Image (cartoon, rainbow, N blue to C red; front, side, top):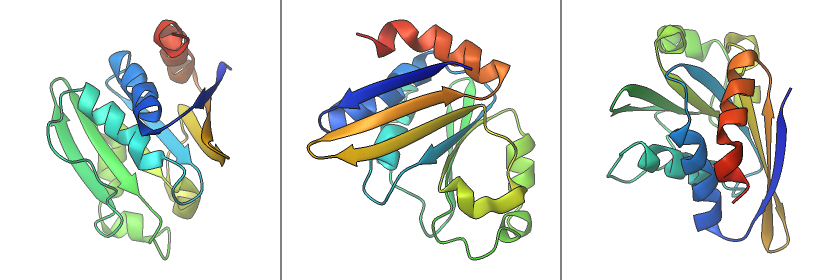
Length: 157
């Protein structure tokens, strides 16, 4: 397992971490994003999507549950499960097909998905500490390990 712990000041630095990981992203991966409301999960996703070429607004799909993006050779699905009432709702909306696709899935509030989610390759934990945000990145699979290892150079600059 590879772990990286970072400290950020402001949204731009949180976005930069997302952008760095986008620059070395595999074309298929599961990423779980953990953190309290306002911790910076969607900010991290914004940096990721914009680094892959997304030009528009990136907002949390709180009510739609998923926002798809076609970005060059990467298909990206941004999930926000905060308002999910029952993990079974994922099955009703066809999420299993999205999880099985050749895609990168970024999932906010994965704990609400219960046993309906595939295992994560990478976990991003964001925590607000005063004026800073702590960002903990952990790989859980060989895909995640290769990914974090490839991103080390831009994460440490």
